[in-house]
Image 1 (cartoon, rainbow, N blue to C red):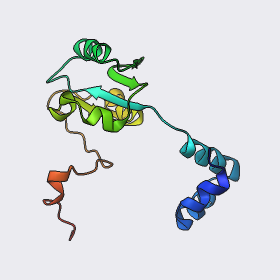
Image 2: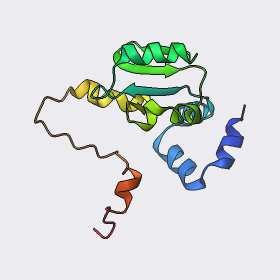
Image 3: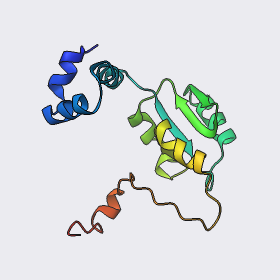
Image 4: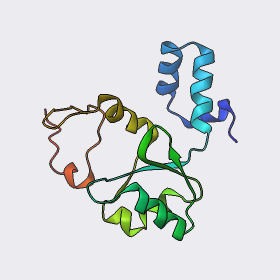
Length: 138
């Protein structure tokens, strides 16, 4: 496991500088320690195309171990497969599941948007096919 010093060497100096300007050293150490922790793969079901019960049955059949996210009924924490393993599955290729971090599941859960409401996601990254359509000239 990497030390905090080793993590700092691997990150941009400006990023580290900004962390220390914005937070006290104990908080920065906690942030850096968190960055070195290995995280399980998490995903959510595209409920328009699939459902959590069928996904759990399928994962049991192909021996993918998982844990349900207690507060998010359509999300799973994968215990014994990598992101690459999940991306090879047809259910991923067909858009039945999405790889997504738990932190990205929180806003829609909390906001609970209703039909016809508009939500602007300022942290969303463009999908690859959308990259060509992005206007970077303002």
